[in-house]
Image (tube, rainbow, N blue to C red; front, side):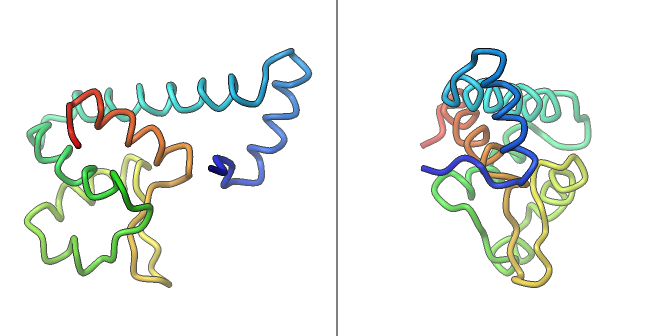
Length: 119
């Protein structure tokens, strides 16, 4: 799978390679950092129950993009807004989809869902 979705990530990979890290090590670090950030944001928020936010993230367990109709009609619209404000998800208005902010973010979401025993 191609993990690079943002142009600056290529430059970061080159810099990390100069420091002796492999591409795989660098990507694993990025995923772990993003996973930690997402977990922190979920646990630090007081507005929603953790389970409700996880329910939204479950939509991305096997899909990179979720049509807005699938979420807007859902009871979790506030949680989606929360995840967008915290730059975990992105609302692509042109294509009417919601998706993680990057492929690395998507991989981190999937890893986090494993920690929460979500299939």
